[in-house]
Length: 244
Image (cartoon, rainbow, N blue to C red; front, side, top):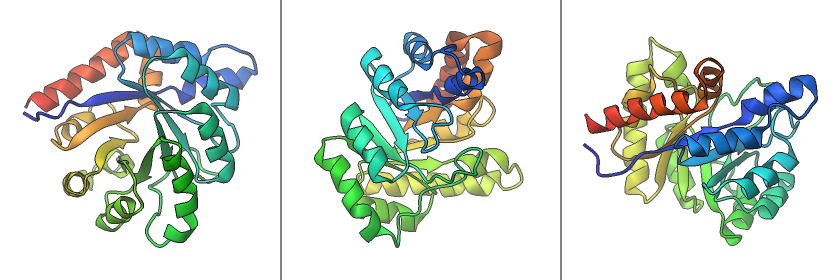
């Protein structure tokens, strides 16, 4: 059993996706964030995309003001997004790759080889006292680059692990090795993307893992059973895996 407590960050982006489909104020992502907090979430994640397809600028400010939990602000590495983050003042700014045509984030951020481009942007986040989180692949090269850039956190992309059943065992080995390396370099290790009740256990069991960020599955499950039961069951799966 790990002595390292495992947190659950709940991403409420897709409440805003449903809201935006009709153009009105309902359902409200702030209400979802508060419901997740009441249900036992340890943090709230929201991704302000450049095209504002779900979360909008006003949502970020409203969520930050409403919740007492840490806010994880997911965003692209652009000056515009960093300007907004500096105004919102989240607990962490999680830098993710972003392409307008993608349905969802398709992989990890490429840090290695782009240090000169990214360093000034990352420095603005760190200088503001905001924790720098980098959403990356479970790659030794990327983890070492993240550490060299002064990141506080790496969030390992679990999409391939979740969606490629044939390659899942090999991907799990890669994630475990990456988490151990991140920990040895002083990085706080998180993971997320595509996790559900069936796939969360082996990731939760990794002793160096500090936090899992889960959104689409939980918000979808909440449509059938409610936010509190959905989060409660996810926490039970996480705790059972950790205890083993």
